[in-house]
Length: 204
Ligand SMILES: N[C@@H](CCC(=O)N[C@@H](CS)C(=O)NCC(=O)O)C(=O)O
Image (cartoon, rainbow, N blue to C red):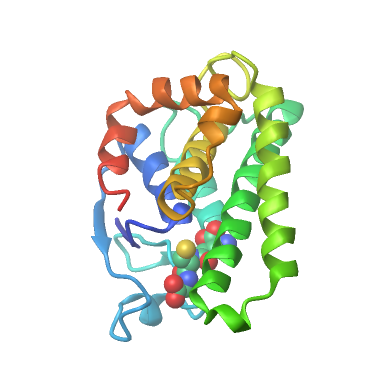
């Protein structure tokens, strides 16, 4: 299978980390929709990345659907609990928090790319505050634990790494490490994983 993405997209990073952590053979192709000739326009009517093209040509999008599908392909490890409905919900809820940070950070990014006089201060404040509050919530939930949910790696951890990496990329002035030292220590521990290391090397 082939994952179409870009190195800057946090949703792509999340999907890619799932493929890497599960050791699912795939080609990772940087082919962003900013290129009008991107293959993504042929395979995803939304023109968004990530898009995962299976060997028979079927295309899967968006990142939530990709991760859901990819997780069924093997059990090593199971990243989304299958039998425990509460644990499954909690992993998905972590993912919603991480995706929400990504969504807000992208709104902020798009806003600051506009000419200064056209930028909406209220939009910037709304979304920056949402990120700040969500980071506080996440840091309080995680505490000093190793994993977001349960006692092993799940999709929750990979989604959170992807959201934090995106903040590092797009909001380098946001000192989330200073505000949340335990979260910073967790991110450092997670960064030692080979798949995450590989993906973070491209975070520029
Ligand atoms: N909810 C989607 C969001 C995907 C998305 O918005 N991707 C962005 C990149 S971060 C995109 O493709 N934007 C179109 C563009 O860059 O032109 C998912 O989780 O896959």
